[in-house]
Image (cartoon, rainbow, N blue to C red; front, top):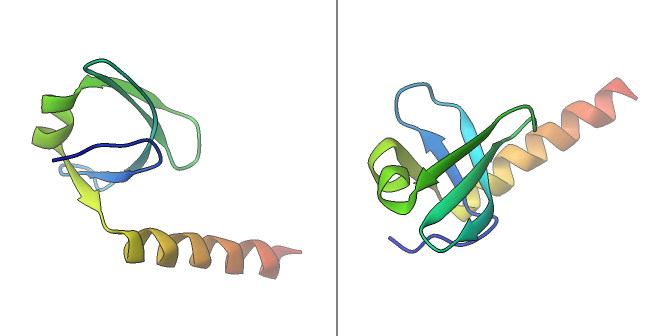
Length: 73
């Protein structure tokens, strides 16, 4: 699997979503959607413990968050 910055992954065990913030050699830095948690993993571990979220799902997730923010204001 090809991993690039800004890809979105979902933890297979918890369902939490993380975005790829940075890739250096074989280390991938994932950041939680809410920005509170960072995880440092090898590329192989990302493939084993996380499932890639397709682009359409990422856009739908972002759109929902935008709608909620608009409703609060």
